[in-house]
Length: 454
Ligand code: PFF
Image (cartoon, rainbow, N blue to C red):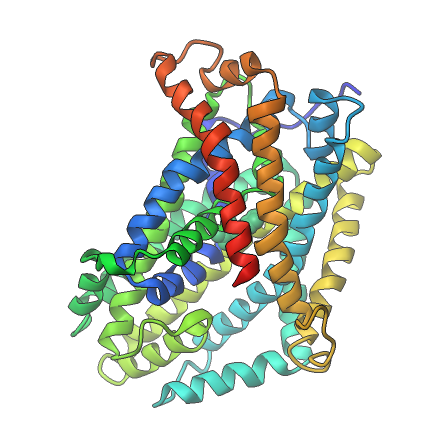
């Protein structure tokens, strides 16, 4: 079916949108707490290596499919492998971002609540335990989190229904530069706190004994999540990139910004954690339980500065979560518009309805539905487990096999070298081809098995 497709306005718009998808809760919430749990600088080294050697090639594989076909996940598979079972990969990658979006929106909703609190009452506590129990009490109530989830998802729906250029592109163009400014400001504040030096050392001086097989698998898994791999978002966004744009430059630019943001977020959070004398390995509760305590504690010395930083911090989280969530939203919308002929507005409403419902169940699973278990996990934990440990890695593996072993090598080379016009010789392509065919598949299997056994 030939149709007119809206495209991103240019290279910077494409990089900002892809970086918007990549930079999210994964960078501000997951990366810092994993660094804290996995041993500081040593984990950062593993993370850098995973991004460059594993995730960049996978990212490019997905981007090449989208850019080559200018179609959503299912349309792309139908074009490149018509009449084969590969269309199931297209379908899988329409469904998995919807599952992630459902629980991601719940966490996005919590961030909205925290932003509201930082703007109104602030955080006034004198022990970490008090914030943890306030957090636990909030998420287990039915209504507050549900309202926040609805607000979060509703705002995403508003942006996506406005279209690629006037919705997604415009939002990312404003938000992404702002996010970088905010996180740098927070980092400067954090590093300037008395006692922050130990946190900086923690991030810069590697303890090589911390390089263990489970740390390696965790670093690979985190780079996968952070770059939004394996669930069709990179494919779908790349399908809105004009043919004249160089996909290698766009992909490398995105990975660079995602890495940079994660590192700055680490330097924004760890020094404050050390300055407040808190254990860096606090785990997933780090930003919702530990940080508010830090803001409260710092507030006793310089009251207004730390309140402003708290507001800026939660603004950063909310907007970073938005830019990622809209990329997941768009995958389903692209499918309904292109394959089912729905209008963008209807498609948005439908995706909103389905993800709202699943998200509501996830949200209630901290309270009234906490007794409902799927394979021994609450609904929220099951959706998280299913997507991060299974669907993302499985989808990523299939994309890599598809591009490395099924797609026409000449077509892949053509995309990679931008129609043969790229200035480097074939050696860079050969490295990419090798990583894609022989390194990425077993590495993904290792992440998968480690996650499963753990
Ligand atoms: N990369 C996002 C983050 O780091 O928060 C998470 C994400 C976005 C995962 C989009 C998957 C996805 F499709």
